[in-house]
Each structure stands twice: as C-alpha cells, then as structure tokens.
Image (cartoon, rainbow, N blue to C red; front, side, top):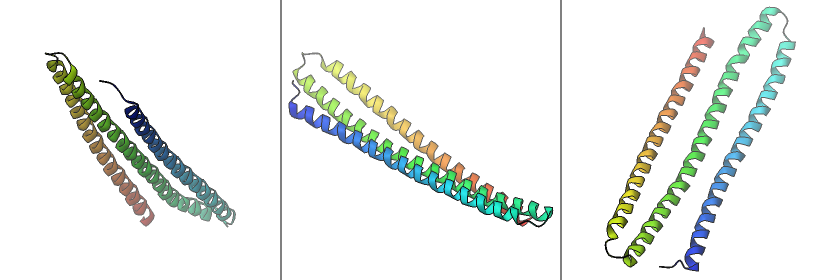
Length: 180
C-alpha cells in the first residue's frame, strides 16, 4: 500500500482550504469586533461631550444632580447592547470554527478508516482483530466527540438564555427605577 502524489496533493489542498477558512472566519470576527469597538468609543465620546455641555449649563445643584441621574440609564442600556453584540459575534465565530473542525475530523476519520481497510487487506492473517480494535477505538472516540459537542451546544443555549434573562432583568430594573 503506497501513498500516491495525488493523495498527498489532495490532502494538502484540503488542509490549506481548512486553514484559509479558519483565517477568514477569524478575520471577519476581528473586523466585526474592531468596528463594534470603534462605534462604542465614538458613542461614548459623543455622549461625554453632550453630558459635559448639559452639566455646564446646569443652573443649580438640584438640576446638576437630576442631570447626572439621567445619564446612567442610557449608559447602562448601551453597555448591555455592547455586551450582547460581543457575545453574539463571539458565539457566531465559535460556531463557524466548530463547523470547520467537525468537517476536518469527519474527513480525517473517513480517510483513516479507508486507509485502515486497505491495510487490513494486505495484512497477515489474524491481524483483523487488531484492525477491528482500532476501528472500535475510532468509533468510541467519535461517540465521545459527538457527546461533547452536544453538551457544548446545550451549554451555549443555557448561556444564551441566561444572557437574555439578565438583560431583561436589568432593563426591567432600569424601567422600574425610571418610573419611580
């Protein structure tokens, strides 16, 4: 059993495509994060200027205190929106990377089992027990990986639910404070 140049070329091409896909995903995430941060800094700067102007125009201490208390609510809402945006694209990026990894693992498993089958055909008598054991180990590893993936997805769903619940709680508290 020999590895042909075509097989090497195909493997190299698949590996290069996987690396380029990961790099693309990471670059898109960095680009989104940079844009989000630039917008956040711009908004904070503009809000700070507007708040400073409003405070400078206060006629007495009571107005100054009232103005300061009105600045907190929009800042909290913007911080929540920022956190949610960061969480969302971090989750999206993680999902994309997981998809690439899952595809590569599936391809690797398929290629390895195929190679194992070819080797078993040329192996001496009695070696089929060892080949069978290796195949069972691969099946067990795949099963463990699938279980891990399911648990990770469930954890992500729970985290998303918790983030949504926390966001709604903070918004509810802010509305209650504003109404009071």
